[in-house]
Amino acid sequence: KDLALREAPALPLSQAPLGEARVVRALAQDRGTLNLLAKLGLVPGKVLRVVEKGDGVGIEMAGEVLRLPEELAQAVGVEALQERAP
Image (cartoon, rainbow, N blue to C red):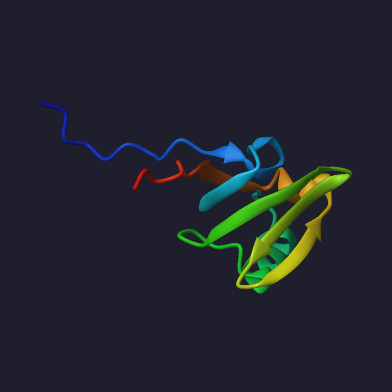
């Protein structure tokens, strides 16, 4: 069996469907963007809700709604979370 850890599949936040998603990694390499993502709290493990798409991406985190420009949304790698069945 292959027990090696695989890198989590990441979809750019700009392409994520509406609904809950978890940040898995930054897709950006430049320090300025990485610092901004950290300042906004968009760090691995953070769960957010994509609430609007169009001119950028609207997300809700910890009760706050933020609008991210398309370029910044492309720098955040997320995995969509399935709605949990009861």
